[in-house]
Length: 75
Image 1 (cartoon, rainbow, N blue to C red):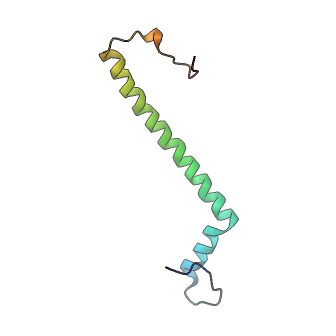
Image 2 (image 1 turned 90 degrees about the vertical axis):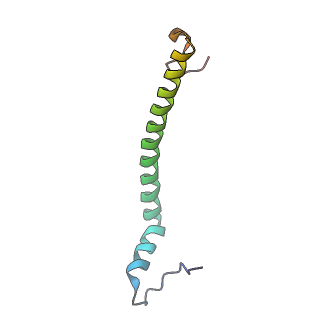
Image 3 (image 1 turned 135 degrees about the vertical axis):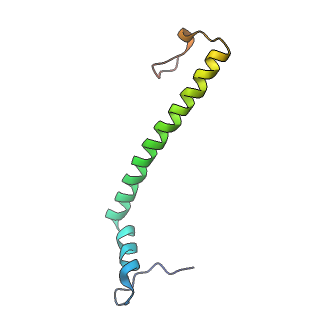
């Protein structure tokens, strides 16, 4: 397993410096922000696919559209 400690005196610091930045508090916050942006996008795409699948099933089973809750609230 690779040692993840950053040795400031090491001559090959390019990768290690970027690792040091990535594991810093600011780096972790940037990574979390990027993940959240990506998650929003992927979630929206997944929901669109889900709606398309459900729409086809509503037609297939002749479900009355007024029986479908479209406002996102259950009950």
